[in-house]
Length: 300
Image (tube, rainbow, N blue to C red):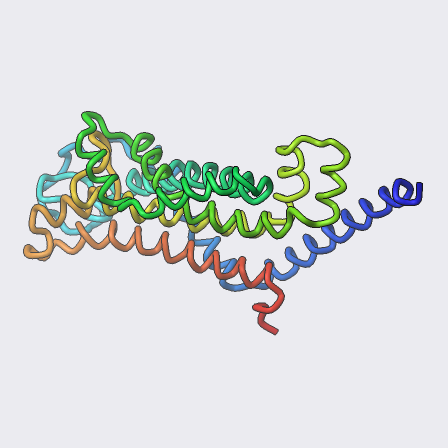
């Protein structure tokens, strides 16, 4: 009887501790320059990629201006050697970059966390099977597989590219989540939930996952940035979307048509700088979050 009577009090204490941790994390988040700078740059570029295309009145691949025009008042980022507006290509490319990050990182995150949670919570033979599957995918040469698969696809779009990137990028997240879930699965509050007859997914989503929320957020950010880099690499070797534009395809086109040799810096610097700034900002954001959630890393 004493255990039953004490359960609500324990739950209230747990909720109070969680609220205190959340308030403390928010306090440090507002004062962490790395987090604020990284988040500000990412959100700024995201808004630019969402809003700016609505103010472009022509297709980004349309030949609308003088060939090889340097940046001026009419063409903010100049034109390609074919007369395409680089500003239009850049803002549409930003949108494509964030979409591929969401698709690829999202697919990898969902698969990785699901496999990691089940393996860590269930243990036993299920853990061994999922661990073996994770190791098999982990040792596959992911980039080679992606190159072969995308090379034979007749139509390559952002969604298809993102799905295939996600299907090859989840193992490290699964292993990391498994190790965390394994340590939490034997806690008293998890045992209590298990004895009360709650379903596995209910226990995972309500008892284990909330205690890993900060770790899960940082994992998604890393997967997001990784998907962007992989997609840029595929685009650069000509295996990007069949139709449309991306920052990687802009680089591939600039290099392929000798922009560097011809001194057309306005053609290759914007997409290269865009990819670099996005990935670097995500890294800075992740470092800032790590400092916020880890008291040992907080700067006094």
